[in-house]
Image 1 (tube, helix red, strand yellow):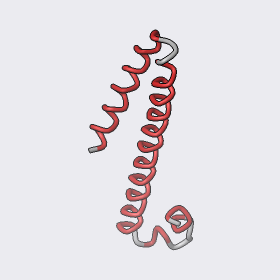
Image 2 (cartoon, helix red, strand yellow):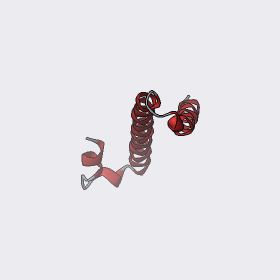
Image 3 (cartoon, rainbow, N blue to C red):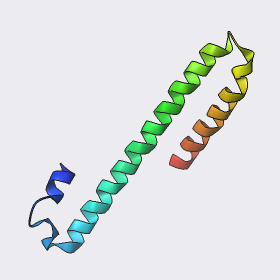
Length: 77
């Protein structure tokens, strides 16, 4: 909806409102990307946990993933 709104010919007539809308859209995209990355890390972590039962050597990858996930969560807060 915001992207469509930004393609309207008169969108940039009110420069201040247009900039606010553009900034809001960029913020939403960044938030979505952060959640997407956290979801991928969470999925990988779950897979590593399942694999850990069969292969102890996967523990380092699991720990690395947990650190990344914790960092992502901390930076989002």
